[in-house]
Length: 171
Image (cartoon, rainbow, N blue to C red; front, side, top):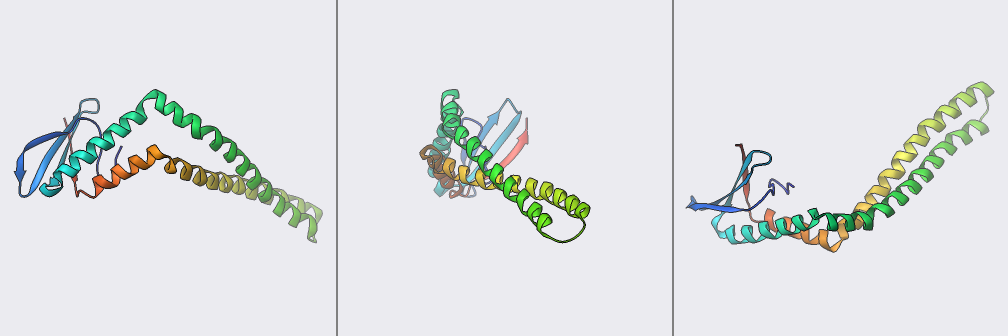
C-alpha cells in the first residue's frame, strides 16, 4: 500500500553503509517481481526503520482475515443501510422537484408530461448519486476515525516525515 511515495511489501533490509549522507534500504517482492530501494537521510534512518516496521505490522494485522471481517462487519452494514437511505431520499427529492414544476406550470399537457418525466429521471438519478456520495463521505469519516486506522495513519505520517525516497526496479 503506497503512502506518499512509499510502498510497503515486506521485510526491510539495510544495504551497506551510508553514502552521501543517505542510508539505503531494500525490499524485494518475489510475487510481483519488483525490488524497492529506499534512500533515507542518515539522521532519520532509525525513525524510518521504526515507522516502516510499525506500519507493516499494522497493515499485516489488517490483512488478517479475522481482523478484516471485524472491520467489514463493523462498517459495511451501516454503510449499506445509510447509503441506500441517502440515495433513496436524494432520488425522491430529485424526481419530485421537476415533476412538481411540470404539474404547476402552464403549457401543453404533452410538453409538461415529457419535460416533467425527463426532468424527474435526470434529477432523480442525480439525487441518487449525490445522496450516495455524501453517505460514502460520512461513512469514510467513521472508518478513518477507527483507532486501528488512526494508528496506521500516524505511522504513515511518521514515514513521510523521514524524507525517504523510493526507487522501483523489475527483477
